[in-house]
Length: 530
Image (cartoon, rainbow, N blue to C red):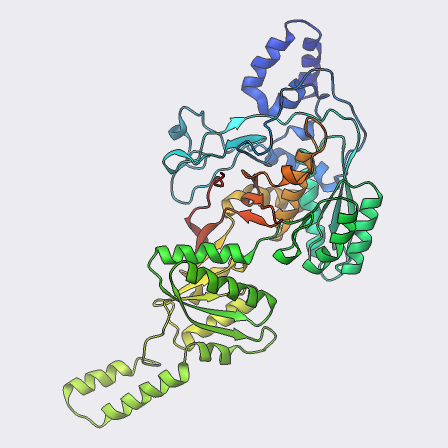
């Protein structure tokens, strides 16, 4: 690699070198793009594909490079302007996922970008721009390969990263720090510096961390994780005119220069309810924990059902701290009344000897209750072990998953969900797992463990910050740049920040199976823009 760049340096000294390098760029733009645009010779780590980068020892002890290095005098072509209908893709190049030529999209393998098979998702290469127009005939638009030009200023760009590196969420915080370092390894240049501060998982710690970051010259803040900490940090950042890209999923903390990158339950609910209605489901019910999350989900659920022309037949809350959820499930199923109706009918038939009554009695002997439930689909708004505990009670109280479609939120997006039989066949909305598959593999190989689900938020935030720091006219963390209507392609698919500061995402619909969830309605490739 070093020898090839030395050779190219010698070529630049001769008049015909420009033509040679442009020809090389047509074949190896993913490797030589930034060099051809006037940057100093890139380090090997900046050009290796994820499979190589993950195997290299460097990410295990990543430290941001902060030494200012002015770019060479070679002029760079202008970048695509913001809000001009392009998606930027913060994705390192993956040699195992080739991108087909625009003229022959059908020639690509099934795993490549142009595949139109059900459930297929694109994995774009490094620095790919996507037209934001709708793809023709339901297929993703062909990519345009382009490299981001280097910044014209040699000044260091500092960005604060606020995470709970101690306290109750320390393990998650450290994993998110690992993910952010991976993003820097893939996207940051010599001028980019990440200032990591420990929030200790408290609002007070977050305020102190934000104050230190701003005092050290941070132009942007990534994090914190929790909504209370994000709310506390807002005034500090706003007073310094520093935007915040938080990892919270609480939309109430967004606005005033704070952008929330977390997964919003309201968006997941809208997606799954609309999909269920398209499949003929009309009557809905919800079973949710009696806490802020549960009430937020139920409010969004009721609004979505009404907006899609359905009816909410029943809503049941349960105490998330309870040792048993039997009472809540029993009430939802109206089990007591339906059970008494069955026993009464059995008693009436037991005194008869005719053949019709005997057959009816035999049939009733196989039932727990009689009487139809007033809903066709049930939203179970929970996750983890509590979800499995609640779901196990549904058949016991005669809520038959074969007759009632189970629906879920993004909390269902976890491995091993199919171990609970009652959830098999259930639907839930979440970012496509295909979009983050490479990240999970690279993280596991680099750090020796699987990343937690929220690690992609830190990766995307750091990648986006590094990209915006490399603008032609210097770092651009403005609201105009962050709220580009066409959005960005990240490790969880497409996303964009709305003017009010919340993240809108392209979500897939997943179906729970014995071996894991599979895509039954894939996520969109582009956002609709005016």
